[in-house]
Length: 111
Length: 113
Image (cartoon, rainbow over the protein chains, first blue to last red):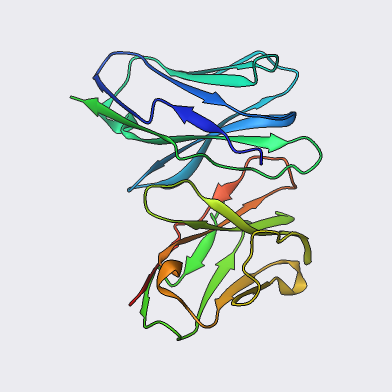
């Protein structure tokens, strides 16, 4: 399957620090999407990067995509306590467009 | 813009009983998804509709789960009979079309005792 696998499984940082999460996948993709899930707001779409893009920014988020290595990373800069959540990458398979979520990275930002 | 609506938010049933979940997607979204999320895991796609047609139901346990999307808008997901392992959060999502970003509802937390 096209399941994304996030690494690390858990990450704990101090407020103001940067957080980096990685994602690997196995086959060709149409795009790759990152989502955040916390108890307050449920599952929320963060950013979509297409297979022909290498980097994308949205506010404090920066996503990179390396299709030759079948990997992506999500960088959150100047983290805040409100960033505490689980982060999932979801590759969208070429042709099927189906999203397959991994187990996520659980980020804890300590005030 | 109103988000994806789901009901009920919580449901507790005994095994072998039946249960139904309802979803109202964002207006104008052609694609609707049902996911199952077990505690500690990511969401798993159960079924995907494009308008009122099924695009993918390969991971739907069809002996007990069924879903429909009449008129290409609202959708219902039914489990009959429920098993203990069906305890999970059932998430509905919608998108403009397949491949676009998905917008998720708050989910229904099902507990089967």
